[in-house]
Image 1: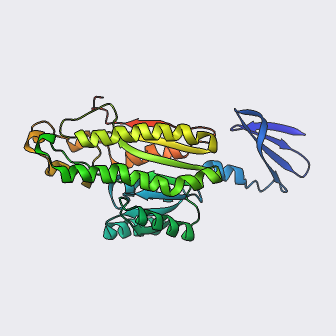
Image 2: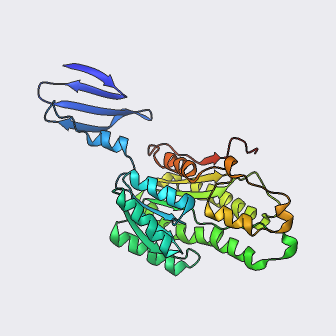
Image 3: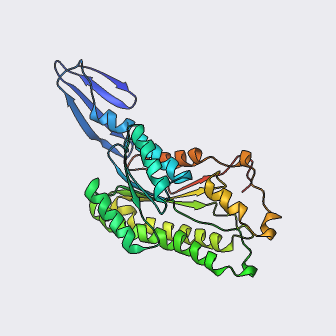
Length: 298
């Protein structure tokens, strides 16, 4: 018999059968073996899974109607995932769904307010009946307001807490038990840059520190049960949400901040970071990703 090594695969040629053994760094034993009956047609399921590890996965993305969430959803669909698009605004949600389907992707649009636990439970139930259990949860929905606390805009504070904290907890609560039972799953929490408190964003910054601490502790609790939890920290990103926040900020904040579009991240760049974290092998965990513009000092 002759043998050779191709891209980490040990290939042994026999008389009528080719065996392909994938070796991993974590064990000296083969993790998968694929047998081929014909040497001339090497169509490997193992190779296909390596090329598109997200293919067939069920992914729920919140805040998916535009911006970062829409970009993540489109890239997940391009990778072969079945994507559940979640947002409060139905019109733009359906537009994102249409774009995905025109590119050959599979998507389900569900109007849902993540601050309402019963709506989240119903959304996950609908996702399950359509595609099956959730493999990936991307908590991307979020709001932020530039306002000094001395103005006591408590309604805005409450909205930040409801969406950025309660909304994330509602979504995690709807999927985490099943992920642990199935011994697989990946939760992505999209947050702001953790080490950069900004004047005028005290409540938003506090919410992000909550997500940081909660995510780290959750990761410690479930890492031995096959579930991954990743924080993706993003600097300023050019999205409609940022544009709205900038246009509505206090005069005090206007004197401090001017996020020029040319120096901000794009939604696509942010989405690529999420996809790369999701595509890592099962025995590799990406705990934290921090993405900022080159000119943005942290």
